[in-house]
Length: 99
Image (spheres, rainbow, N blue to C red):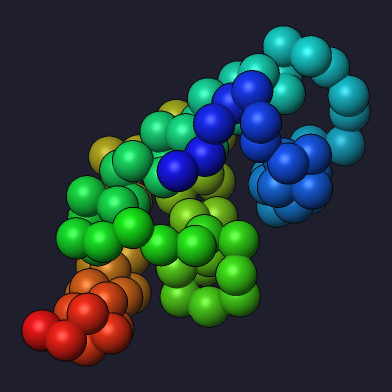
């Protein structure tokens, strides 16, 4: 699990690049860090498993997409827009966990 106090700066920078946030502002960084923590918890629930959201693959794709929807205040549209990818990731995690 991510921790706001020990979150690697490279993770924050990766998310900022994805969101096209080019400025440095402590309040913006705090907002994005909070969103990152929320995204991890929400996706762990949706996927039924904990994942490494910074390793290339479907989990990172969903994580960054979730954050983009959160940044644009339209999380209510995320599940339906990414339903296929969520199902694919759930199946992948079930397979990896022997189920």
